[in-house]
Image (tube, rainbow, N blue to C red; front, side):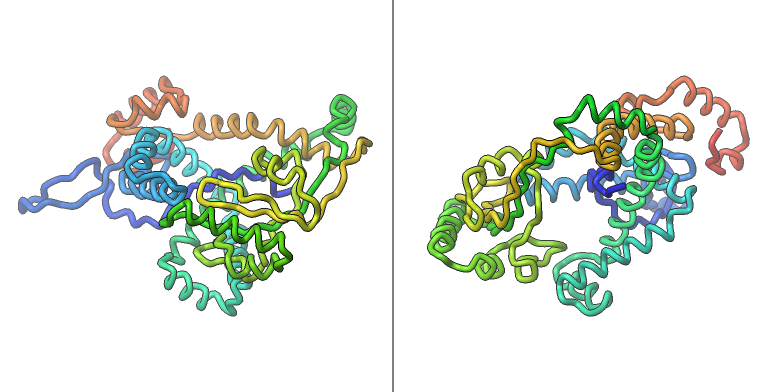
Length: 376
């Protein structure tokens, strides 16, 4: 099954060293202040802590700032959705735990290494060690980057194995044919295009100046300038802090027209093969698009079993994933601290009656029994 089933909301988490599991700052016997971390939620044997929430909050604020949002507005926007952030971290923790239970750790680690090697090759770097040095030189933490990848890939692997694959392979042939006949228009071949781009960021620049530069490049291209050369010299698209155009010459890939964002499809609608669009203003800069190829649409519907399975899976996966997470939550021990329970529990739709029963049961035991953090 194609990897496109994997969703991925790409939420980042950094490595965290848990120093102390107490709910608030406490005074040591000698009267000294002990630095501790607040537990926001217990998720089976693991915890979501205040420092984890703050770290994720900071990363989301930085992401919005990089998209052009003013810092105060970005801070207000992320703070407004703190409860959703905590709920997301709880769901992610459950998926990580499930991944360990399914023994996916070695598979995930291999994928992390493969992706890091791919990045090294794309940048002309000959070893992982040199890639680490390059990342540090760009202000990135290679350990944190690997952990981010590790977390995301684990979540994806669990969802793919436990939800998407089961939907995809569980569809009987008669259901596939019935769906095909009822949705023949979905299985015609739409128009597709191969695109390249020159991206100019206006982060830290005067937007009018960036637009003027984009118009200048369009003029040069329409006068016969080599697109690949101008892209390599000017495009500012980055991967892991490194410009990619010197290697890919601005190539983006093939897209079916119905899958393109509306503003992009409109911008390239009348552009012939080899032509370039006017500058398109996007969230973080201006984009000049070149149409490298066009493939005309076909009106003939063709039954392809995998394509039909894919179409049905894409329709059903969101609901099935939600149900899967709901079952994980129902089977888990999740206890949210009093300060956050009122705002977070409704988002998770926790079975509060069952949770209360679990809490009552756990409080009747000894302290040593409670500290085992087992599911009730």
